[in-house]
Picture 1 (cartoon, rainbow, N blue to C red):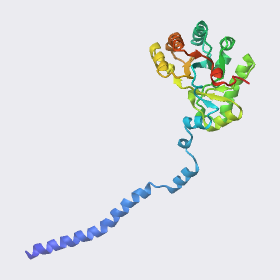
Picture 2 (cartoon, rainbow, N blue to C red):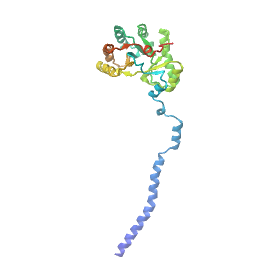
Picture 3 (cartoon, rainbow, N blue to C red):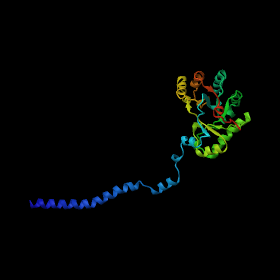
Picture 4 (tube, one colour):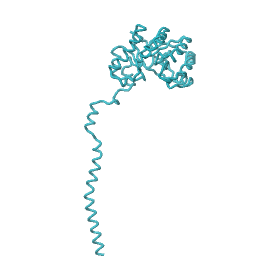
Length: 272
C-alpha cells in the first residue's frame, strides 16, 4: 500500500515537472506561427508599389474618361454595326456583299498587318463608304504593352491606312477591349476616341447563325454598338456571322432602327 502511494506521488511530481517544461514551448510555437506569416517588409513594399489589382477597371476608366471612352451612342433608334480583325479574304468580302445588298454602312476596325497583306480588300472597304477605325497593327493585348509599344501599334496602323486613304483614323478599338489608364491618357491627349461596344455577338467562338442572332437581338437597346468580326485567326469560322447578318439587318429595320456608322452615332470625326 505504502509502495503504491509512493509510486503514485512520484508519477504526479513527474507529470507536473514535464507540464511546466512543455507548456512554454507549445505556447511559443503557437504565437510564432502568425508572426511567421507577417512580413512587414513585404507589406511596406505593397503599400508603396501598386499591384496590377490596384489598376482601375474598364468600368472606372469609362466613367473617368466618359467623353473619350465610349461603348454606345445616345438613346435613339440608331445602331452601329462594327466588324473587327479586317481585312480577311475568307470573310470580309462576304460581309461587304451583304452590307452592299442591304444598303448598310458599317464601321470596320482594321489591323495594320492585314492592310499590308491585303491592301486591295482594304481599299474595297474604304471605297464602299464604310467608316474605318484602328484595331492595332498586330492585335496584342494592350495591357501587356508599354506606352511606347502601344503608340507604335497605333501609329503603324495609321501609316498603313494613310498610304491608301490619305487620312489618319481617330477611332481606336483595343484588341479584347483592354487598355491601361496610361494608354488612355495618351489617346485623350492626342484627341482619339476609344470605342468598345455594348452588344457582343460572341461570333468569334464560331457559333451558329441562330446563336449570333439571339446574342445580338437579346441585348439590343437604342444607340447600341454591336461587336462582330469579319476576320480572324487561323481556324476561325465566321459562318454564323455571315449567315446571321441579313436576318439581323431585316429584324432591326422592322423594329424601326436605322443603321449608321460609329462616327455618325457618336457625333465625332472619323479622321484627322
